Length: 492
Image (tube, rainbow, N blue to C red):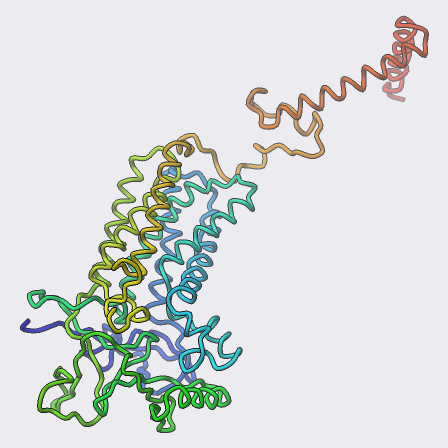
């Protein structure tokens, strides 16, 4: 290979994915992709990140939910009131954020949240901070499961009246749109990159190296080290440093700053190069085991040329699946088919993309450099197989039992179209409006109420007959009562 592309994080020292930061006041970056000028440039340390490119992409993905619901509502493909789209957006946000984070915690990185130090929390307060305040690490399979769970809760809370299937159809189209932006964010953050690329691939790219815990990996003293940030709380920092030294005696370098170096020879189990700055401001890449060289100083690590698999997945899981769902939508007649198509097509695209994606470092080990977990498959591929099986079963179900979209009515229905259920009476449940008697929802209750009232009248009538000596006496008494009522109605 003559050359390899550099990720912007390596090629430009000013590159950052952070857009807004609070550090003694709100700071807006001007050195992000395009230099617009006139906007303050942050050069200090510390502060809280308010918005970075990753969460901007999440915001765009969620706005897409409103766009697709509004578009298909105007096309009369789904008959819903405008506020239903906002309900769907709220539930999608909860399902995606909570589901994706929960899956990452329990499937991909449980040691960081529940394991012992040095990677695990030092106490309960630190553990809660990691769970609820550290939003790095999201799993797409968990996002899909979380959204499906929120949709089911919505359907149950609506009394099983919400058109859940067709709402999920639009929700999955929105999800495919969102995948495009999330994979773009993965690329911008230089994470989840691919396996080593062939020499002939012109778009192979180098990325900065991180450990399985997300820490930058550096090379010094012929050893790999992770640069780990200290907890901000002094008491937690003291406990944390103590646990590091107990876990790795002599393997901790602390210069008194905000970070320490933690020796971990297994921090990265794939090929890498050293990034060597030059006097003219440029840099070169050198293999760390170059014969005849003894390296002094501290060097950042970069990968050997890799597939930019984030962009592959953007095309496969995002663009391709979105186009497929839009094409499929025009050809299905039953609600739920598009959603089932997503739960089938997305995992297939993810399964294929995993062949170029670097497996999760958490599952790597000596003799298992590819990080496979079962029969040569990665964790992402195993989860994809389960999701695809669910999608196929859902497609068969909706193909046979799904409601016809053209026959679906407005949700929620207008109050004039609904019939009160309690108390049951002819006045409340009666014929009302221009709707035919045979088409009124709840007509059985009308019949039951009339039959009950008729039975009461029959009993009263029989009692009156017995009291007045037969039917003629009863009729005479009834005639007199009607006459008295008529006299009472006359004006005074």
